Image 1 (tube, rainbow, N blue to C red):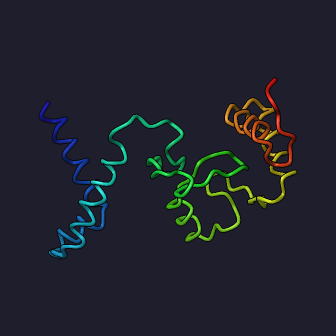
Image 2 (tube, helix red, strand yellow):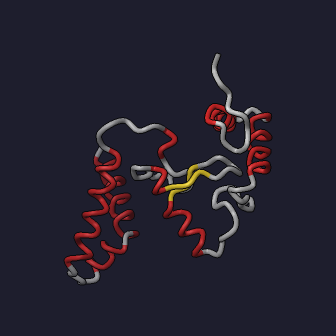
Length: 154
């Protein structure tokens, strides 16, 4: 049992050493704003994961962190792969020079006003049995988006 706690402590030390705040604190920099930033980030993570149970799709598919609410303002769902990517991962991809491609599947972005190609991409994924694509396709018919006729329940 003590060995496990030592391993857990080493992992904790390793995670702390990766953060810039802990590295600055060890180097002797006692900047209050850096210390608050580290504690604030930890508090934000605890608040985002506490409370109501969040759905599986509420996390970014790249970094696996929960997306802040409202999710539509802090993330984007791409039609190419139908995966939710947070703004932080989009920014990180842009800093690496990936501007016109999806950060998850690397497919070129399709213009959002090109309804025919967006609908074709979703239909192609739905025909292959992708459950998420079937859900999105059903929503397009239910609300009458992407140029399809609104499906009225009888």
